[in-house]
Length: 412
Length: 167
Image (cartoon, rainbow over the protein chains, first blue to last red):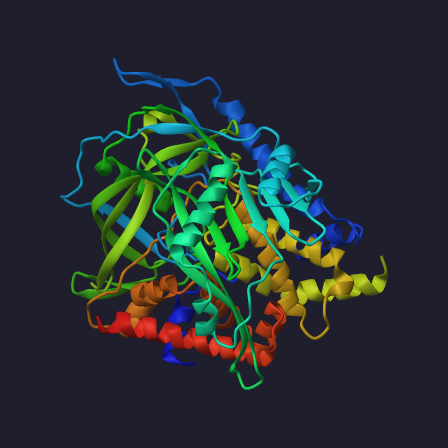
């Protein structure tokens, strides 16, 4: 194994916690009871459990009100916790990566973090009430004509497909998302450089994308465009490029009063100036509500709380550490992941989407912390973290079930 | 439903459930045992439903392909809440062997710098153990094309890692 492979393997979560199903024979028995042609059971099962968890927490938390001494009164926001954590933490990384590394972090506030609470409004989102109709409307904007099909049987996923194979998918879970794909392709070239060379310029791509945004009519504001490209190639047997077809890709972040959110739109345009793929959120913005925030310093404590709930099965892990004690060296085996100390020195505010226990969607302020991480051996590097910024008095985090099992709530 | 299908499904489950579970764990870590079992079962339901479609010469890649779709649906279905992912920058100190297993921030940074598709391709090989034949089966490309792509991604990854290591 090479040095590179060793280093990659050391970060593999499954090496330390290899997966074993808790009752394999029972699963086989359950699954083989199903007809082999049973379509739709697959995701309905998962999502019903998820919905059940939301209903349970809503019953636990309805009607709560909180206020700050003589300050304004707001309804408590009841947020579904994915893992029983005492405070919710937003999930987006700067890179958009979904991979997580097996490490535990101890957070502390650096001198640059204020104990004074900043201000930033929260927003309830209005989402289309009829998913099927909205799927049809968005499909028509992209020139896709057809009858919406409820693909998973529970009304959360609708697809419109036309006779050419162009399709519009509309997902109603969380913030609804639409996604358009076309069968249209650009002109194939013999090299990647050649295929990039025949793409429309950035200004034309931006103009075309903005025309669709205007037709969609959601009214949200967008950041400056960010451009990229993608190339699909076929190879000769010797590995050389046979044909290449590129698309120009433009991405926008949804902004609210100039503040970035975790919502974005993307459009892919081919060499014929045709949009071949696009995706984005379906919502309009409600009025701002000035929920009090906690201080950047206080947010650090919530990050640590999340950490303590993150490794519930640490007794089964295998990392070790030596501890010297009064001249006699005792070796103590500590279970759990490697520890990294993180000092956070600065922050910015952005808005992240949360779903409350009543199913409503909100854009809530989050702290984006930046600081230094140091491992056991003293090496360090920069790191960024995200944490809900609302004052905890106005947030109730509900666990999915008292037994600790979240049954279908996916945490990533 | 024939007993032949059941026998084959049972064999597939016993042989490949650990690999499927590990694949899901790596992409949704941390995830509690019950939730992970649920996702594995959802994957197995799809495989059972399409048992006649499972290719004899590429069973595991095909099953991982199903797990990828289950994962994609799970991510789309969940609301954005909880958990976090760090993005660490290159470190500036001498490296030690221990550093690799404690907090290899350079590896993390290099992985984060790869595109999502390239990172997945690299980790399917490095973590999930898929060789170029299996990668080709999963991505519906030739073994040769998979080898070319893997080589390109590994080269790019080494370049990113090299840049991080010397800083």
